[in-house]
Image 1 (spheres, rainbow, N blue to C red):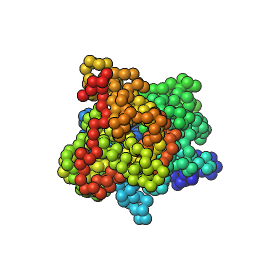
Image 2 (image 1 turned 180 degrees about the vertical axis):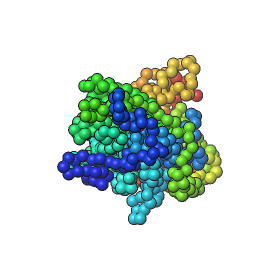
Image 3 (image 1 turned 60 degrees about the horizontal axis):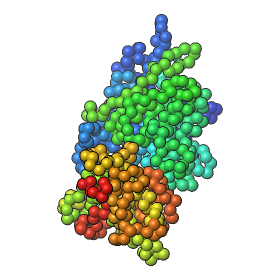
Image 4 (image 1 turned 90 degrees about the horizontal axis):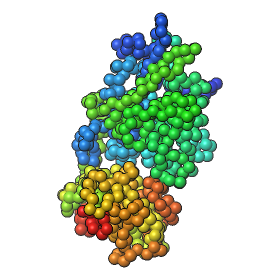
Length: 607
């Protein structure tokens, strides 16, 4: 499964070099776009010859084109009043190009592009781009119109399967890069590893900028069903060490890495893979020859982070713009001409906030029909609810809306195992508070209400575990809470997310009854674990209804990845919930909701 050579622009048989002259870097800028000579290229006369250019970067766009929340059916907003979407990014990009001169800029992305909103879901599943005479993906349309030069692959690019990703790749006017996404059979690149861009200066030799794309090794776990036997994903550091010297030997004056990998040096998959999940800073430290790294995956904002390379002593500049198009990174490069070559004299990074500008009407107009179609789709009524339910307190209380997820999962697994040798085993179910803003209203329930409970494309599995293993599982999950002594004032906002653990990595297990004693140390917090009124037998066998992310090692929870798989579904859990509501017509919490777990301190409930 080799990458499409058409995406690897300008390849020559003699050298294997690739020069991508797409979008911003291709044609000379018109006179009105030209900045002052000091910003443009080596200047004749006394003093050093210099050239300045800017690389703009986004990451973790997750299907956001419009400043719109399809789950709430209104303009996006959060506590910080951030805005989202490529339409906002386009306005910022236009401003930077007007200031710097279009030919003195590049625009790249660090992955996770085609999953995350109902807009992107619709064109992967409802009106798929893979259909005969199917539509062009909205993200491809928007990114083509804005003029992206290259994009790294993110792990969520694989959520819908390789055919959808390949079709998206075909629809993009820029290469999708993944130096560590290899064909499992040949171990050759399955996508273009890099692209080379030529910036034309008015004096002297043009500047050659190489963009090396690196994706996340966790794909092998998280999307095992889609990639096993087809692709393999070695570590970022080893592939960067292979390609950076090659890019320099091909004449690259500047090497930029676009990495779908955070900078913390941590991993969520423990010892299941020999690679680091968030390896961007390690790549900067250990691989010589890199000038800057656009960081993705971690959904954090890092305006500028400097890492000293241990071999050269030179600083590598890292930057991670905030997710969903909330920020645009700018890497500002200053180059000098000496001894017949360009060299990087200075790199600085900063981020621009998309809430400071209006949406680009060119982008909103281009995709207005797609947006309206998806809004109509998510507002279809599929049933009614006897009362309102909210996930707002889900991280600290057993709430009905999360019980709904677990109840649907457990019921689905029981039905799937009926008539098998596993049919008589008790079924329990895990779920997290995936979104604190998720809600089901009293009265009419729409697709967007049900889908909002589960914003990820996870599928459902059944795994066989013992009572002792499930207690270990719950103890590991309970690390999520900050240890709080009896009598100490409890602030719910400060009680959760210990050690930076995200909400989606705190699981409650539906079907068990237990306390989580937050006054106790990690590893001994689960108290009174019982099933149907009796203490859980450590040797007893249970079926765990679990999402594929957790089953494949996501979050590094114990036992589940190694547990026997009894059944697996190919449909997303969100669709299972939607179909469940449709089939019953009425959602009544009295039929599934209970307070089966609570937070305590020495037996006294926290709330």
